[in-house]
Amino acid sequence: MREIIVRLAHIFIKNIVKIVTLLFAVSIISFTLVNISPIDPVQQYLLGLGTAVSQEKRAEIEAYLGVDRPPVERYLTWLNELMHGNMGESSIYRRPVADIIGERFVNSLALMLSAWVLAGLMGFVLGCLMGMYHDRLPDKILKKICYVLSSLPAFWLGLLLLLVFSVWLGWFPIGFSSPIGVISDNVTISQKIHHLILPAITLSIMSFSNIALHTRQKLIDVLNSEYVLFAKARGEGKWSILRNHGLRNILFPALTLQFASFAELFGGSVMAENVFSYPGLGSAVSAAGLQGDVPLLLGITLFSALFVCVGNMIADLLYGVIDPRTLEVDNEEAGQH
Image 1: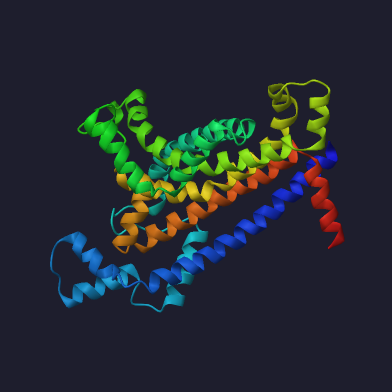
Image 2: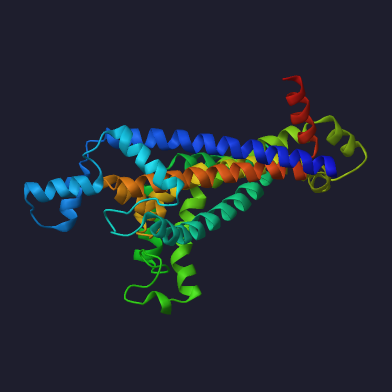
């Protein structure tokens, strides 16, 4: 037990070093892309004010936004402020970036977590069904459905679900995270869940197909293995084989793919939040990119990268807990190097 804890601690420290290195690289790349963008942050700032200004006032705004300094100096200044916990101020919302991320992340986390769990359960169950009925009618139908859903654009599917369930049937609201005209303090949990259901279903439908197809193939490989053939010779039924031999062998790869889908989930949430006017990080990063809000765009980019990296680190740690043999393999590879 002590040896397992030591190896898990080694994995944790190794992942922390990777995360810090990756975030530093992401910050440089993001800052470079923002600087070569054709969008003028000063012009976008003036559009937000809605008034014409003199050249002297424009120069003051340039100094306030820091665009009058060389890019390297601006990056080092921003990095120094970030190290002290200051992520800057948004030029769109006129508020600290950290406060905006904190507020928007609550909504995005509820959306992504709901879609993540729903996609994982749907994908795993359907993958097991397809694997058990390999090359039969249920497998062929479900496999075609997965192929079609995985190829659909998120915004198109979101608009279709809005049209059917919100406009035609009226089962769900058209958008937003709460009823229009209701103060946030008066919004009930049931109302928030009601507004969350359709975006979460949209996002989960875009994610579960990969998990289902991957689980299907892994289960087929397991069912064709020698130890399953031996179990069949002993008289075990197919569902008993799934329970006793299949689940433990396909759960590990499914868990791997589920945690690896964090990046796709973040990308899909940007589309879903914009389609459903859902006030999360996705809609905020779209507004920041279109209006040249550099501090907000960099802040959300770094936060998103951190979120994805932490998800992958949790997956690595869970691998060691679920199957300690992976720790032995990693230790042997480290010893060889």
